[in-house]
Length: 226
Image (cartoon, rainbow, N blue to C red; front, side, top):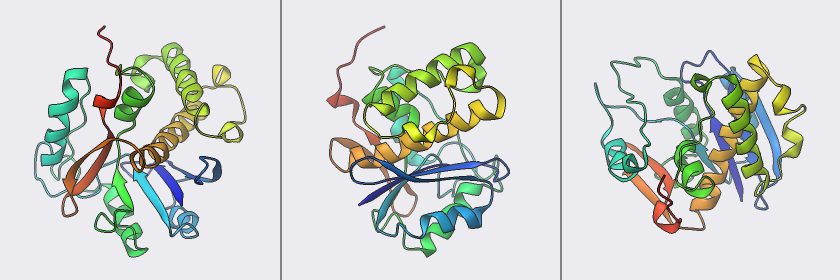
């Protein structure tokens, strides 16, 4: 069995990060591109994989959140975790929807239980960071961002063989290189999510017609109040 994590560009213009892991959680292949044909070509050899994608894949709602996102928020908002509302009004074109259609043609679908929406922040909180949000996105500033990207890498390196994925040190990375590290780490979390949820407790929000969001269950972790 293979586990593929995808951190997609929402516009399709920026780069999408893809990582492929084997059953021993060894990274065996990667892809980083904004060319959907290259993304699909990289995935074709892994037709028996389970894929986790950090994005909504089916959008039917005109406004607001999708129904299963609201269900997710009922569980995770108490931990200070939210998510972006994705709808047709805000995103008349949404690259992950296009990507899902291409992957569906390869046999990956919610009905087949071999592709899922995942949410890296939720997995990081639940599996690694004691139910606390890890602030590693660009809005937090470069110093905090570098520190927490390195922290996230250390978390993941403890469970995934991924050292060859990063050619330089995170402490020296900046600009596009730091963004690339962040994208690959998100993709790694996506792959780890579907690996983890195939073996341990998880929540499944939604259904095959509207998308299924797979999230590790916080009930199986020790929660420490801040």
